[in-house]
Length: 192
Image: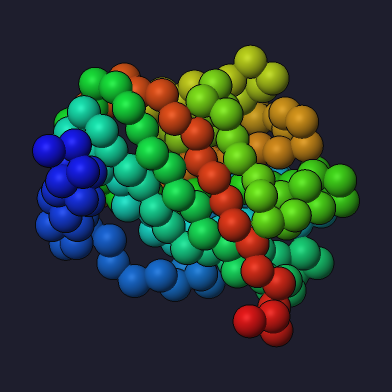
């Protein structure tokens, strides 16, 4: 029974997420993140970044998430990456989101591109939405909606251990109180 449950969750997640995933246009995703004043400053000052145009996530008790992306350094693609996550806990539904990970320095970039990078269950991301006020620091992240013209200008975000993560919802609905970390793989350009 348990062997059939996880494939069932992934199968169900596919049907929940299929209509909202859309294309994986890296240029459009980068442009979307650059439109946020909170995120834009990281493009100007980072050593490199990883972009995931669409990560699909779904679950019923046990869940999972997966997405493919590209890693950039100096404005050029240096490799392909993928993210996989398994979650356990109270959760129901499915969602799709975009994610960008900024690397503050060469050390953080090399750690990520080592091919075996993982975020712990306590890692947090800053959720960016239209008119969002976001705040991130070494103790986590939070976000809240605001309708004012200066929304986002009041936002603060900071690197934690050389990395800061931003997400932007694309669609879906998921209720979740779960634990689980994101694991990343990396394959350099031209290596297959």
